[in-house]
Image (cartoon, rainbow, N blue to C red; front, side):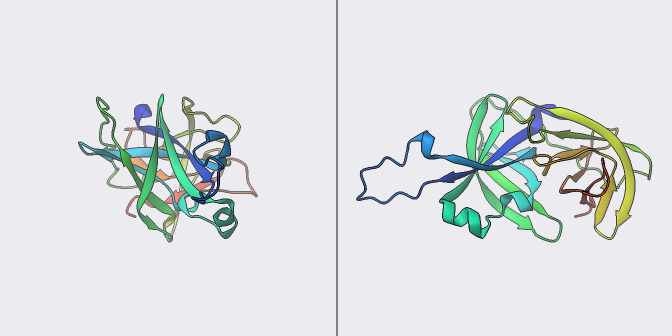
Length: 197
């Protein structure tokens, strides 16, 4: 499992600066966290990294829009950087982000599975759920693959706020899905899109 490819994401509200006002908009105290999520670096180029996460985290709600300019900050180990949305799928609830790659950073490409596991096979989830979230937290949860209904697949993985966007791997360390939802009716039931999406 590519633990070094784990990304902790924070959606931030930045005050909208009005040029003729004397208040400073660069003051970090004015930046407010709005939400957190997990993500995984799926690849990198010589200048950028590419992060896969849940689209519902990337989207900006009407309430968030009135709070100020919304930006997403990615924490990878001790480093942090702002990232931008490259593309997204509302249907699959997936979002691809990109950010600058810092000098001397090296990331292996995350291998994507060619097919879903068999029902009952073990899967591993790497996430930073709410309340335990920090840039250096990489919690591993195991569970089992329970099958798919159309494009959504079900896993017996515990999840809560902040788990969204976290990677789900098969036992060979290949990415099979991204966690996008947790059941409110059953404990340890979570969902993610089919690997073909």
